Length: 590
Image (cartoon, rainbow, N blue to C red; front, side, top):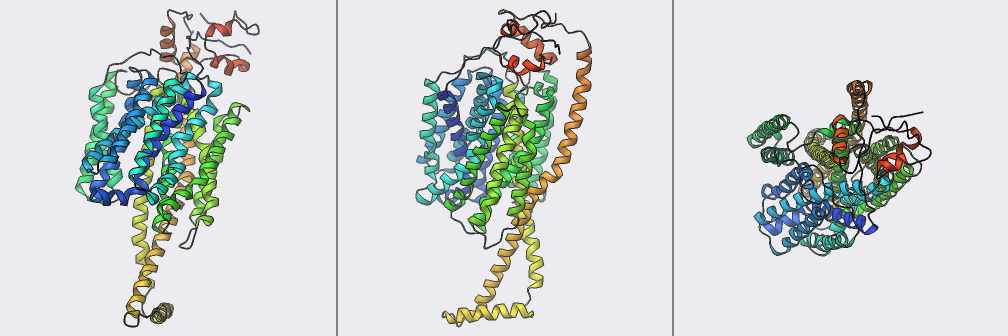
């Protein structure tokens, strides 16, 4: 079948070495260690800083809000600074900010350092993934994106909690931050000596300071609401209500300002012209809720209900990391060698996560690590199949001018989905504990034969141990403790079921969105396909003009089905024309 190939701009890609990829992986690992430090070290940090829970919350709020801002603003920095230098600088800033926590316990300084960590982490994640896409051809992206996911997704979900739990139990919470310093130095060193891609010269847009200010207000307000909403019963607290109103108003003003900017604002909306990116952006919210929600529930249940130490809670997730990595490599092999489309593995990932959460919903007060391990391992398998596919679906069809913006938007959606998921689970657990206590307490009365027998048995046991005077009151206290524990277990089981049901309700919605997007994109692109195409022939002097033309009108890069993938991966369009088995006379439409 003959096909028309529009002129393709010259793509200057240099082969990046193994040291270059290893440097980016270590850089993402610094963010993984810094991002999860508060999950297990909360109580220890509060004790050492003498902070109240409300004051401590700003450590997390500042970090998360600046990470959202960094995701949205990273593409503007990439247009002005060489990506390689930007990653090195961000990694060193991350290491310095973590190292400075060793010399201070002042809460205000720790908040400022967390803000620096959030901003630098977001920039290095976006710049690192963008460089991998630009440095290697499309055919090699599955294995490279799997390697990148090991540092950006696997490490914070499995490896970092285990390391942090061991450091807290054996050393101190400050050692968690100190562990980032050597990793940051190693990453910066590898990136300095490695053979990286040549610096590109993308089109620069002016800095949108108004848009940056508006999105900063939005990020801080919404992060505060999602972080503290469950603690203050959401809109019953005036501070939460006003933060929501201010954040919504700032968001509407930001979107309106971006529309009026006509392509010169902070956000680049051209990735939304791609059907696959639009779909993956919606999926990122659901995937973020599943990833962060399950990563929050499992250690929280282990520590608060099963009385695990921080080390044991961290080690609980570590075996799933090995399955996560194995699944990423298997999925990369299927996509890169067997040419399996990325969307084919998504249903398997969703099904495995659903089954894993359903299995965890049967946990009890007597459950141990062995009882939960099969479900946790299955979760690791599902996440591996899901996240690599979503990344390839989202970014493969973007171009070098808008890929950084697309990566930033996708990570923003995933982080927002995680915040919403964790906030919803916290509220669900708290409300269910209260409701369960009411129901169970109504059936545990002193006149019941089962209750009287239980109290008598416990009082006899306490009397045998020398508590004659307080045996009756102690037995009642122990029974109250059992009721509270059982109420908490039921609440957590309900939360595990909620994560499983999230996919049950989201799956038909996502399918509907996919169908609507396909029909809408097909309808809007049909006039361009039917009209005559006028594509300029690229040459070394006007390659940028051709790239702008192709990006503006989203002309499909069409080739014969046999050589579609090969043509997309070529560095220069002229190589395609020189191939003896391609019809030269019919390849370029003028």
